[in-house]
Image (cartoon, rainbow, N blue to C red; front, side):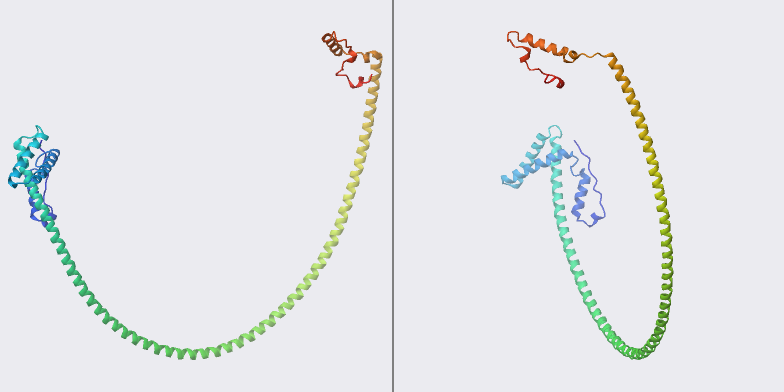
Length: 335
């Protein structure tokens, strides 16, 4: 099997890399990519067998050239056995040669990249140190400039403070003079306000007195109106009470009349009922004859029970007189 090779075109970043990196990329582009035109799985098998064969040859010791030749032969035999029918011995030997060159270029790339990174870090450290030195020098210059500026500002501040003190003394003197004038004006104003207050108080007192007199007059008028209202309410109450008493008397009279009519109707009804009862009693007595034996005669149910008891105890010699009679009516007890 033959696998396709990948492209390793140069980029802007590769221009700054070591030439060993470019050499590896050119080799891979020319020989078919990282698997040397082999299938990636087949190449993985090859690399595994190459690693194990190399480790075994290192452990055996001896002449390096002889060891390398023996290891190469064992590797080719192992690959042909692991990938039967896929590659010829010539193809495996060519791939082994390619792999040896690839591993060498790969090791050179690793070493070159390690050196390139170390040089880059050293250059970065040197640039950082140089930048730190420049920054320290700039800080010293800035500190000196700031110290000069602070000294100039301190002098200006001192001059400003002196001017402010002088201005404050002048303003304080003017304020004292203004305060004295304000005190005198305040005294005059207070005296004037006191006189105005006394005048207003006199007016307020007169108004209060007038309001008191008006209120007393209003209260007297209100008391008179209340007295008249109460008299009128009392008269109205008397009239209402009289009307209520008249209604009560009329209702009582109507109730007496109704009771009288009801009693008359009841008496008439009782008379009709008594008359009807007398007529019914006469009709019954005319149809029923008096028979005392009929009242004391046993009922059919009683005769049936007595016969049942006699049939159940024929040889006992017991009469009906010795049996306990149940279901005897109360009106027959003691007869």
